[in-house]
Length: 345
Image (tube, rainbow, N blue to C red; front, side):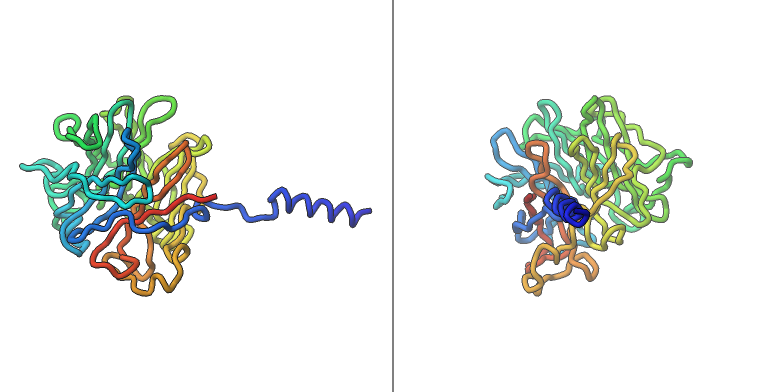
């Protein structure tokens, strides 16, 4: 009887799924293909949104040529691409934002956009700088915002010049005098009101995710004095969303917090303290067979073929597609492109 009871219990646990490994977000992604490839340009992080026209719109940074350095620092512009479906093909539509004239904070290059809709208007966050030389770049990176009633523009910078977040001047803040400024914006309209603007910055040893909060969309955004992720090695490129009642940040993991070349999904109950984490995506080789990567060409990365700047298309309150940049062209093409992954159960 005792052995029969144990056998029944084991069978019950197996059927219930308790004996099976819990899947992470990384296990659900399936490689689809190239989202944006534009001859004559490097294309970096592409942020997706579904328009009122039912089409999928991507906002990505691009610059002329086939070299990543120093183009992203000195000649970046934010381009708008459109497709009939999330998997593409995407076609160039227009330039949403470019470096402005004069001596404004963003007059040299704009980079790493993220697109959202709040109420009846579209909101475009981006990075800008006023000098692409090293130094002062990247410590002069700041975050701006532009709004429009249409995804085709025109885009109007908020306030005087679009600037919504600068590095802190308070020496007690975690990222005071950060060598990479404040960059890589991730935005979230909170369910109970207010707005969260996450960003990457540095404590002098590693990059972490920080947070600025605002009561109104256009600000002012007030930075929290502490970082919201506690990571032992650098993470970057966050994308913010809410999943199953949890605040989530999807970041890269280029230095091996979980796995070098993968991604991290951070989770939080309040959006301020991200204490839970799981693998957000794997290195590229986990999704494409080795033979398909045999011609991969390195434009801006180490020896691991990896994804950068993840941006998520949310449908029915669930992740549906993941758009990612890479320093590699997986198939040996002439410049970096943007790729798309699909969420599968």
